[in-house]
Length: 235
Image (cartoon, rainbow, N blue to C red; front, side, top):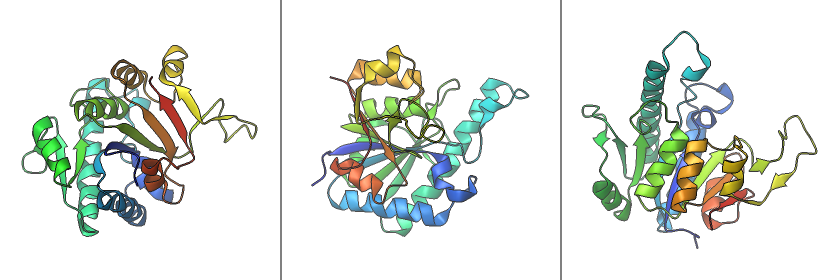
């Protein structure tokens, strides 16, 4: 039995690219889709935000204006959501892609009421295009949409299995935290999630669970509360 009724799943674009690190790895996307399908069959309502790092990381460039770089990043997240939503349909789920701004007939304009109706009808919804504004990361969009949609938790899939006191890739003695309060992230400006996102979650009591997408059945385990990750508490 899943621990949550409605979740916001945050996926990184790089994770969906697999070992290629860019574009899409279809096998990885299908594996993610099959895990989410298991959740929907258990009655869990799933909304998804996907980062755009497999296509664009404009903040590393000094040649493009930040405003334009962020707009390109928004478009990258739309490409990811449109692609992954179709993979989800391929494995047998109903989906809908929302954006905060008009994209012709490619996406639907975000409406909380319509999004909630879709979730309650068993559709998986994709929330693309970030917040619709520059200077905000997809982490911020994740927190905002999770709060708007009254999700029970943010499930944040990363390349590592939680929060450490130092980089486990370079420090074999790095200590992993099984649980920490959101105020620790805010007060110490930890780079676990975007600071704006952390403040939003702290002020609106939105818990986060950080886990590894590489863990077998990691998404399912996270929804069941059995994944090997870090629980970010807000109480």
